Image 1 (cartoon, rainbow, N blue to C red):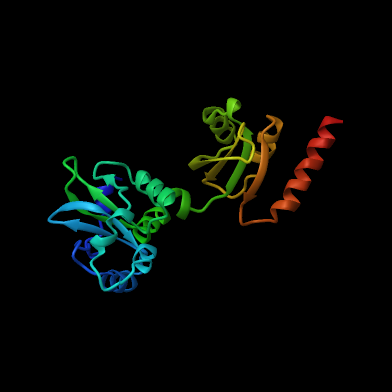
Image 2 (image 1 turned 60 degrees about the vertical axis):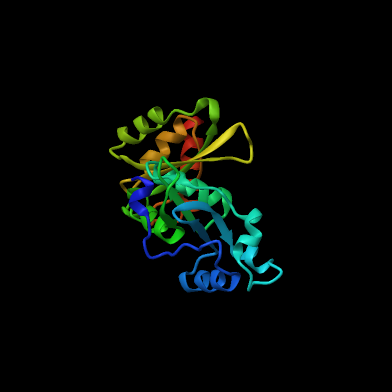
Length: 220
């Protein structure tokens, strides 16, 4: 899904001549903390609620604090995950979308992004969530997927996050089934460390304890 497909038409943009009062009122009306500032189709940046509140006089034009504008944006043909990245890195609730010639096309709101994420198979399909911690150098999704598929399951989605230890990462798997006992057992036999799972069927700590006991028994 591309950024241009998620543009929210009802969110207004500010003109540089609009004052701080107008900006704050619109942010409150649309439940956002930043808005795009546009002058005749040219994107000038986004202004935040904090920027406005720090103005000497909120009755003045927002152009008086243009040096505080955030200039992050996404292109219309970039993937939606690029918008997620900008939202996260710049703490925005609204992300501007530009075309290849830097024309302002509209914006994407964080609420729209959440709707997209909620509709991904990883979020709304029934199935277990499994989190592994492993060395960056030993990461192979193909190998892990092979173990999962050997146990008659499929991976619906993945998410990778860095660990506190820079040499490791955490891999989150969304599977298409909730009965994952044999999958956990197989992964443990291949020396994968399982740090979390949720299958909506049993208490994860109790289940891990039972599998640890089984593994200890088999290694005797």
